[in-house]
Length: 130
Image 1: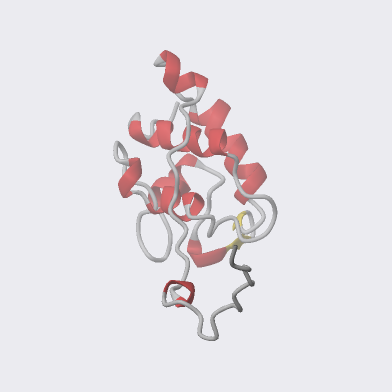
Image 2: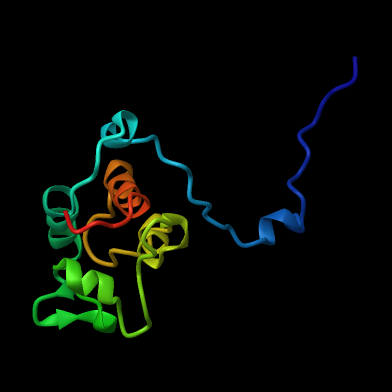
């Protein structure tokens, strides 16, 4: 019976190991609101969430990139760079992209999948001031 000897690791890393890693956003399970077809409320669901998670940098006296996320009117106005939501099309909304790719919030905990789904549902429902 031949004797097996361990092979030394390759001296050159594989081509794959040199490729940059890309994070692909994964679809999130729907929230109870979207499961039941319930309307997401800006005043009850969205405004408190944005105030809590985004208000330090995008609200009050401090509005990075000119984006204030504390009021409905300010969110609809957008940032110095233009609109951040496209009512009825969450997949074409910068706000969703920035949160889903984990670029925002920069400081503090990231939004949870159910919190992100609430924002997606609200935008897809027309981003109403309700």
